Length: 342
Ligand code: MRU
Image (cartoon, rainbow, N blue to C red; front, side, top):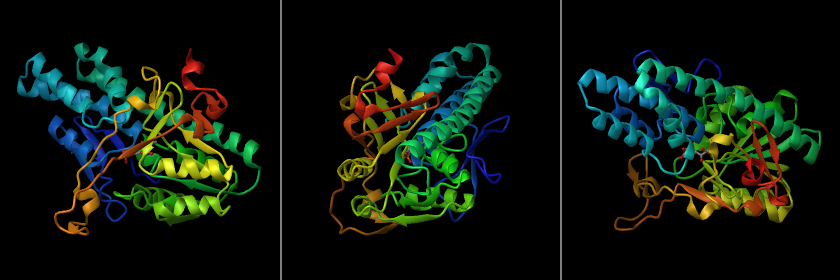
């Protein structure tokens, strides 16, 4: 994270998480020293964003191994606790991948798990720097080498990763080169990751930003006010179909209609090569209260139901470019992640 605020950090006896539910008003931390606290934090979005969930999952295994030793659990109880962390949220493949990455170290003990989780954290920050540079290079070549108007959705920044960010990593890189005129940050209903988190990060970095309602985004794009949209991803199928925060599809459709690029910025750990296309991506459905109420006060009439999918799937044909830590794939032109890795 920037300005001395860390998204997540191992403290020696637990995982310290910046509580993103309280931002931007309060900077407070939750320290997870047991599995129940960590799983609750993941479900409540104290920690969120696909790469950050991957790192949290990896450290979560260390939390489980330490708790098992402390409380005298047998292997079955320890493994069940690890599975609970792995399944705390379904859509971002990084969570399960982060857990799986450190499993071979469990037999060596908690310190070995922590070392591997820390390696994942460090790789994530390095990878995001590379994503930022590849993405900015591609955009300046493709769109024009001038200050640009960029739209982003949800939060794919330092808060959603171990640092720097994916989509916001691209925007940060463009800003360092003096190539950002304005960032339109979609507010991102229902939990306002754009208004609360992306705007907070951009303001801290001194990047000009305007928060807009999600419903404004397609119109802003069609009116010619946006040069490029850059978003993150939670899971990408082999053909390039991309799951990201609900509302991303509207942005993608508008980009296609307006003839501007939709750039997806994500590490290879977000690609799920086991899925041929997006139809198999599990879409998390969250609590009705998230859309029927705000700040604890009911906003919809009593007795009304809600439909609250947290993610949508943008078809590969609408994804102009996928920027990873190894370079750029022009997905809608046929350069799919599955083919690139075949
Ligand atoms: O529900 P969230 O806040 O975890 O959703 C996060 C997103 O959709 C992000 O855009 C995505 O994980 C990419 S983060 C680099």
